[in-house]
Amino acid sequence: MIPTQPAYPNKVYLNGDILDAKKAQISVFDRGFIFGDGIYEVMAQINGRFFYGESHIDRLKRCVNEIGISLDVEALEAAIPAVLEASELTGKDCLLYIQVTRGVAPRQHSFPKGIKPTVMMYAWPKNFPEINKAHASVVTMADFRWSRCDIKMTSLLGNVMANEYAQMNACFETLLVRNGLITEASHCNVFFVKDGVVYTHPSGPLILDGITRQVVLEICEKQGIPVRLEGIAAEEITNMDEAFLTGTSTQVLAIQKVDDHRFFDTTPGPVTQRIQEAFLELKRTP
Image (cartoon, rainbow, N blue to C red; front, side):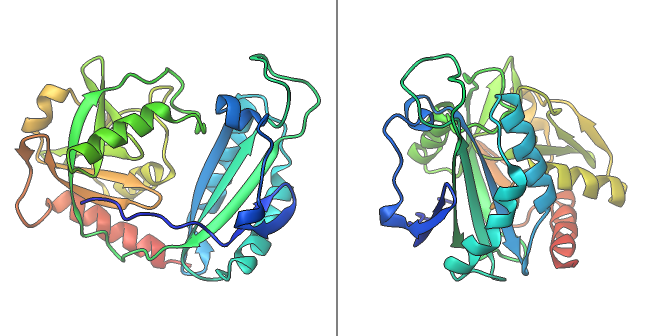
C-alpha cells in the first residue's frame, strides 16, 4: 500500500487573506522556513462536520503554548468556513491543513520579541472510505528523533526520513523503535493486539498523542476491550496477534506485515475489525 500523490490546493488562507495558491507567498526570513519553528494541525471534515474538531483545535492551542507562540485561535477558527467556501468544499469531505509559525524576523536562534505569527490554512477534497480496508505493510527502524514528539511541529525531518525509508521498501509506514520499544510510526500511531488485549505506547514526550488514537482508546473503553498503555518490544512483534495504525486521514488501518512477519493473508483480526466498525459508527453519528 503506497500513498497517493497529493495535489496543490486552489486557495490558501494566509494572514487573514484568502489568495490563489500561486499568489500565496511568505518572506524568506519566516522562521518556519529558516528553522521549522512552527506548529501544524490537520482536521478531517466528514459528513459535513469536522470529526473531533474541538480536540484538534485544543491540541493546536496546547502546542503553540508549548513553544511560546501567541495565537488568536478563535480568530483562526472563525476563518475556517471562508476557507472551505473559497475552496468549494463547504459541507464536503475534505482535509484542512493549518500551519502557524513564529513569524518573520532576522535569523537568530532565540525567540524574537514582538513579531506576529504567520498563519496559513488550506483545504483539499478527500474521499474517506467507510472502513479503510487496505492492508498495510510496514518496516521498522531506530527512532532517532528528539524527545518532544508530543509537540506537533513543522520541523519533521526525522519523520520525513522515516517515511522515505518506508517508501524505499515499498511499504506504507515505518514503525519507530526507541530503547527497544515501538513508540509510533512516521505519521501514525500504532496498536498491537494479543489475546484480545490492545497495547499501545503511553502518551508522553516520545509520541504524538493522535486524536484518532484517543478516539480508539475511547472505543475500547466503551466496547469493553481491555487496553494496556505500554510499548511493545520490537522483538515481541512476532508474538502479537494483530496490529493496526491510526491517523486523521489513515483512520484505522490493519497492518498485514511488519518487516518479514505476516499477521494475516486476507482478513484482519477480529479486534481490529471490531474497532473499525465502531469507528465507522462514530463517523456516522451527528
